[in-house]
Amino acid sequence: MKTLQNPNAPADAVEQIVAKWRHAGDRGDAEALAALGYCYANGKGVSKDDVEARKFFEQAADQGSIVGKANLGLFLIQGRGGDKNSSRGILLLESSADAGSSESQVFLGEVYYFGLQNQGTPDYSKAYDHLIHPAEAGHPAAQNMIGVMFKDGLTGKIDLDAARVWLEKAALNGNGKACFNLSELWNHNSENRWARIESIRWLIVGDRQGEITAAYHLEDIRSLVPPDELAVATELGENTILRLPVTK
Image (cartoon, helix red, strand yellow):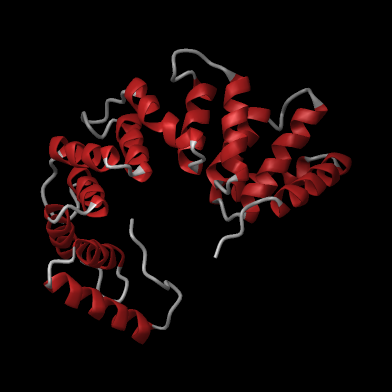
């Protein structure tokens, strides 16, 4: 989604930004309309209002905004701000993806992965087809989902080596969920000492990124980990954290 120019700006500054977008939107500026939709969808500078957000995304999409089409598509699929219309939502996401939006490709992958297009029935083949290109281009969420698909055999067979490669790419790109998935893959109950250390290492990295599942799991098992293994895992985790992208 399109973000505010400075999400950490004081409230009055955010309101001024919103006012400028509203003025531009009144003149038919497609990206300003999409930005206004984002503001209402997330309560940035205005009260959160899905109906208003959907209205602005609809106007932005009508003006040809790729961002507007993508977000309207999500709102239609999720039924936010109005009735669900999955078929139209998917068409909008596909149009946005065809126009070069990698985020829309990822959104489409998630739609098919979770079965949002068909009352909860996943289509993992289509999910993979949409996710693999953004994953190869370095999109962390797509890399994580591709990793999970290999880990759980959702691509047709379990491939733990491929799962490990993709999950590590995602984790090193700052995806906290991938850290927890890597921890599960290595298995802290393994008979292999190194596997146990790797499992704890990735829990530590996920915890530091604020991934709540990793944090809870680490808290539950920390006291059960042999001190020497915890020391090695902690050192590896701290070194890994230094390699992560800096978030603003």
